[in-house]
Image (cartoon, rainbow, N blue to C red; front, side, top):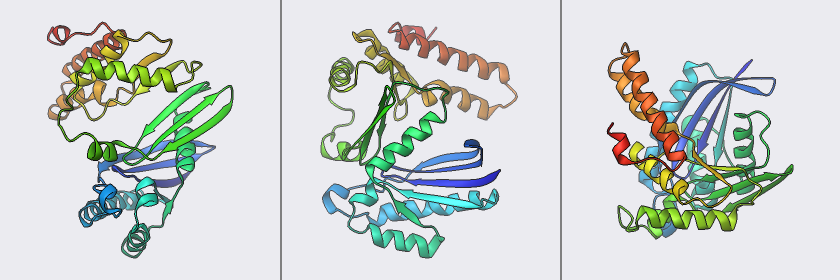
Length: 279
């Protein structure tokens, strides 16, 4: 086995993965991510700001301590859309090399999509006829594999650029029902009918919001797509928070986890309600 580390220097967050690699498989030892928003105001200035750079460097220092702790033999450091689009990317990369002895490799949108596809496939057995939508801070990659024909599309639009250009109101001044309706229309217009299901990310919202939004999608879903969530935060957050305060209270943690699993299951069927959350 070989200890390897990967640092994904993204437009919205910077991620770290440390793993043992053997026979094409990864045994994950440590992973985390920090929101660094490297692409803050980049649409206006075309540069990575000093404040963004400071946040980024602070996180890199933290990650290097973890890498040293695990005695990692090889480190891969990848730069995505923010480095592709900023005029001072070369300066930032040179600074990172001098300060941290890290080589940031800028990859294309197509390469980013391919790596995303490989990462998803490594988590499933015999994955077929799928669509992956990787929504980043500055770009969005759509990766589909229908009948063993891989197609990758990268668009220069992401959550940071969208929020800065279009969503100045918080919360967004649209009803959840309207957003669900527009989301379904977008999916019907864009996703091949052969794709069996679509999994949304549940981050960036509370557990109740995640359940409510998924419920509305499924309530109005008139397609053959199975609509679901990755369920990371929507399923685990309350249980982890409760358990962190009293690690011996396993029963209480399980009860909270089971409740959230039930709420997520109902939302996936379009049968969830706020009243059920309080029972």
